[in-house]
Length: 347
Image 1: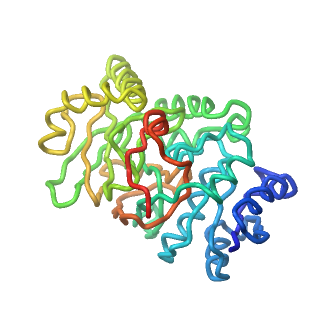
Image 2: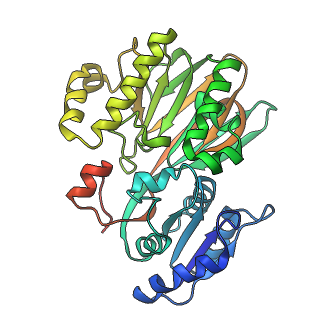
Image 3: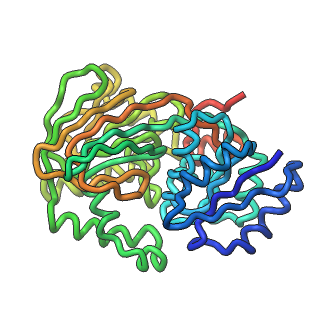
């Protein structure tokens, strides 16, 4: 068997990568991997598509969220059964964290998981959207997409500060976004339910529950249930922002304290009955296999797994159930408690 390593050369030197890679190859009976650096004119999506056409048995994305998303997009687009490994080298490392991969672990440990870890199914989300200039685009995301504060946070966060301060650098981007355009108006529809109008600070489309900084807005969201969690953030005044912060902290804690998760779910009667949250809180939402939306105010900045797409007028997101196979640490009860992993393991 042979793997392809798609890596971002701005994140790691190839010699360092090769040294950490070799023991995992040998331990799992893989031949020498095909190591492919990305370039400004050669994306991770193109590199992964070429590797798949070349007949590799495993594709490993080494880089930040952008490299991981682009690599996964090639696998989803081609409907390839080839497994995806993730070596997190970025600031957010969203997919890695939701898979239970700790970015703080040594590089060699990440490769051991990529080559020899448990294979798990992963839903992939396909977005078709209209940009501010009228062009239609089609993109994939694996963890989250959204507009409003989350997209502005990415737009206004300095790359140098991300390198120095990690995810804390995003707080400056949030502050700048709130000063410029704190709210927008939009309509959205989940599956065949009625269309709802909303005035919001952010609209998030979540395939996984854990976001930057370990914040969890949707503790019941899993990446292999065929469903997308739509979370509308609309705090009202300073007290609304305090409520939002408190709910985010509780939901984050609930991922490691299962009894608290049960209390939160049991107290949320509307979610039990109608699969949506109450409409008068700082965080509201719904869940479904497809979501359409249209922005009634000015076109909004939109992000996909931490990549800024541009300003979007409208869009449609469709969940492709079990579209990918990903490598993750072996799932035991400890991992379930720590990372909230509740999905299935591929046989």
